[in-house]
Amino acid sequence: MQSKLLWTILLNIIITLSQAVGGIVSGSMALLSDATHNFSDVITLVISYIANRLAYNKEQSIDKTFGYKRAEIVAAAINATILIVLAIFLLIEGIQRFSHPRKVDGTLIIWISVLSIVLNTISVLLVKKQAKNNLNLKSIYLNLFSDVFTSFGVLVGGLLIKFNGLYILDPIITLAIAIYLFYMSWGILFASVRIIMQFAPKDIDISAVEKAVTKLPSVKNIHHVHIWQLNDQDYHLEAHVEFYKNIKLSEFDEICERIEKILLEKFNIKHSFLQPEWNRDDPKEYIIKD
Image (cartoon, rainbow, N blue to C red; front, side):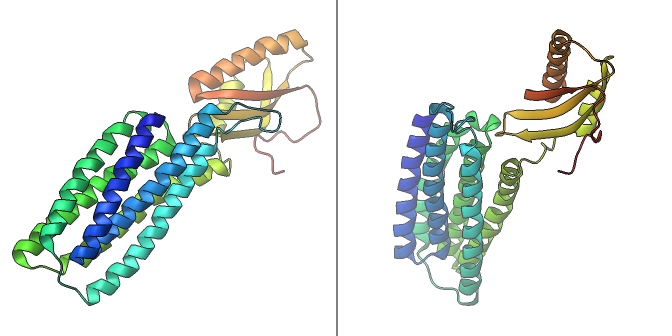
């Protein structure tokens, strides 16, 4: 995967340079906005590449017991933040240009847009497979996928500018790119922040976890439950488990294995820490306000 990211970085550098030069020469704000967009891609791809290496090549240690498994989530949050800031910048520039449209070179816009479409499509295909189960790579995939459409929009605008003289389309395309960038990035940023803040995964109902575990005959209740994501794949749970009677440690081990099986099969929770209790005087709500 790392070699594919390197190729994607190289392709986006080529796209960015061609669009920047073309935007300056042609006078197209839409082309420059797409160049700025792709420059942000280069930055985010480099961040993602570093995060990917940290996440998979660095083992846990005494001072880093989880290793760098959350590095990709941090990278996804940074990527999305960069895109949101960029979208706001493009909105401002697009509105200003909309008030004062300028004459631009449609032919140059057309050729550079075609180049961008081809190279962005190759980039999308390079990361598509791994993006399904990785939030960081998903942010990259969605970003590159949107690049294809934004470049296609710039191409259509270039054609209309060249053959119909519709120079007003240049700032309109800029505004459309900005709005789409903001919409696309907000969901990724929100999902990343949820993981960083250790919120419970949206697809897990804690009350359903409680009901599933307490179906075991010896379990009286579970309480003080915390469920969080280490990254977009690893779900963790910690909880106090109260029993009806004073069981042996060997019995707890057997019940613990059954609970872990339930958690994995029904809720995809792969890691759990269970504290056994019997007749202990503490709050029994499954969510405790610490």
